[in-house]
Image (cartoon, rainbow, N blue to C red; front, side, top):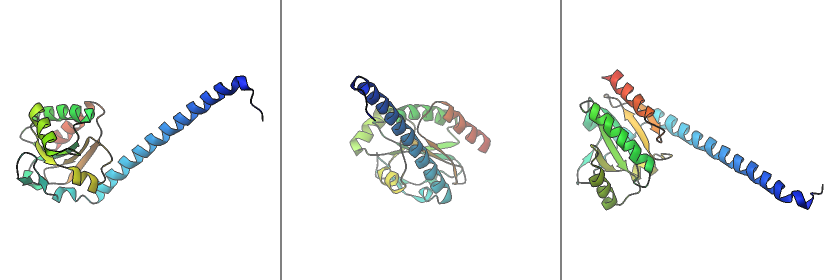
Length: 180
């Protein structure tokens, strides 16, 4: 088969578009599979609830079990992730609305202590800020932000991956309202 030189650029453009489409498709498909595998793994054996978390601002530590009788959201975040900041704004609104029913453990990923402290001071979110890089790697969490919701009995109730829109926080509000 011989390709006429005047059609060569068009042929290359078509090949590029097809290749780019396949790359996007397989990337998104793989990402979805990673999220699903992570969720299945966490629901099967949730040992994150027994982890001791080191607080960022003090030498204290905490555990999910320290918040008995409350919903606990473990939120993995990074200051370079705009989705994490948008997520924190929505999560702060939920925390304000259900202050007696929910605690938030905000686990900083990939930050130096001073970076995390600057973020905390700039934003003043009502969360318990902890170091979370070790747990992020250990539990192979596939992206940021990631939120694991524990019910008042300390059992994993739900997992939210990423930040899509305010609607996912409506789901969190429903979980809290139904579980009170």
